[in-house]
Structure formats: C-alpha cells, structure tokens
Length: 362
Image 1 (spheres, rainbow, N blue to C red):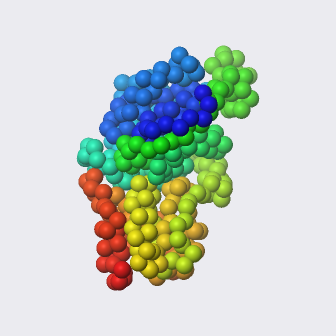
Image 2 (cartoon, rainbow, N blue to C red):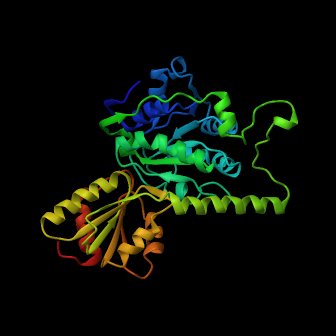
C-alpha cells in the first residue's frame, strides 16, 4: 500500500496506521468511544495481508496481559480502550514499565469518574502522566488534536517505545476519536522478521529451552538492592526522555500578553478563540503540549516570564493546571477553565473565562 488520502474517523485512522506500521499484534476489548479501532481492524482483516494478529480478549485485563506477552518477545504490539477500560489495564501497564517493554496503548477518553458518560473528556490526564498504576514510572504520552496526528502518532509511539524500552500512550479525547477528517495514510511497512527482532531486541524472550539463549522477562525482583538499582535505571531513562522528546506547538506567542495552554481537541477550540481575539486587537497566544509527558516545562516557564497571566483550558476539573503552575512558578498567575460531563466549551466561553479570571477587556 502506498501513501493514500482518505476521509475517516480518528479511531479508524489508528487501525489503518497500525497495519501500515507493520504492527505484529493488537489485543483489545470494545468500549465506547473507541470501539471503532477494534471494529476497523476486524473489517480490514490484516492477518490475511500483513500477518498482524487481531484478537478481542475476554476482558481489558486479559488484553493488557496479552500485550505484555507479545512485547516480551520483541513484537510490536498494542491495545486500545477508553477511560474505565484503561483503569483496568493499570496493573499490566505497570508490569510493562517495570519489565522495560515497548508497547503502544491508546486511550480515547470519556467522562468519569466511574462509568460516567460516553461523551468526551480529558479527565485521564493524571492517570496517564502520573503513572496510573503502582510504583515510580512514566509513560511517554502523546496528545493528538487531529485525525492526522492520530495516524502519525501510532508510528511515533511505537518508535519511541522501542527506542527507550518503555510503553507509550496515545491520549486522545472522544472528540478526536470520533470526528472525521482528511488524513494522509503512510506507506505500508514490512513487519520485521524473527531475525530482525532478535537483532534489534536482544533482551527479548525467545522461548528457547537452553539457558544460554533464553531471556527471562519479569517485573519481579526480591532483592531490595537490585530493585533499587532497577528503579534508578528507570529514572535515568526518564531523564533522557525529558531531555530529548519534549514536543509542543506555539501559536501567536511572540507578542502575547496572555497565554492559553490546552491540549487535544480543546486546543483547536482555543485557537479559534484566539484568532477572534487577535482580529479585535487583543494579544493572546496558545501553547499546545503534544507530549503531556514529558511536559514542556521550559517553554511554559519562558512564556510565563513574558505574559501577564496563563489560562489552562481542559475538559476536566483542573489537572494539567498543576503541571503548568509548577512550570510557571511565580512568573505569572495561572488559572483554570474547564467543562465536565462531556460538555465541550465554545470559543466564546473560553474568551469569557479569560475576561473573568484576569479582568481583561476583550
């Protein structure tokens, strides 16, 4: 398959991109609003073309443990779910991180807590960026704001996961998963051969019976000194990721007097609000984090020293604002505006919030 332009949903794009990346396996379970990932894979039947395994597990817990098994052999494997389903996967995600296994996890967020609503949300920010499972670990967290980025971040997520031997997550809100846009699908990659996997992943379990050539992959270490050394190694990896993999976009920040920070679909709403404000002569800028972890702390600190105030806009009660406040320090006041329960703000509401929080005349 060559590069191709299509009109499709974000969830559908994830499925197409996984096949074209040359992924070895997908293990998932249906839940709104991400069920189209599994449904599209079932429709495309990649096991007949690329050899990719697609399996609907009996539960979310089973799916993440299948990912663990596939990743332990060096395969490019993934899963997808939505908020409550990802909550069920947290133990397995922690095991993946502790075993230093690359894998891709897709979370298309819905409203919570609990079963909540099937409408969009961004309330899984803490779960994704702070390590929702037990222990000291991080995921690389990519936040798409378009269907094109849903496509592109599959390859990026896999590549970063293998580069650093750690799980990556695509954290999309339900709007990005369900909306339809034009997307450029990448050319088809060939799946790696077993010889290539052994060369690229010398740590992988091969299944060979002789001890000389058989690796044991586990997150268990009963020796406290060795477990501490494992954790120190993890932290060195996370420091390297923070140094090299921060991604973000800035809009109209050169002369901005006020800054909005937003991610995912909300960043698009905020950009429209800023364009309207700019047309009226008001100097407002936008910073959109693309990696929610590692977080663009240095960029926010730089802009905080320039502006009079920062507004975070999120589909939650205020989660990313904690990281923005830590980054900004005392340089600028930081306020939050958010909607919950699946309600999405319009550009006018964003501008009203800016007026109210900072007494700005817009």
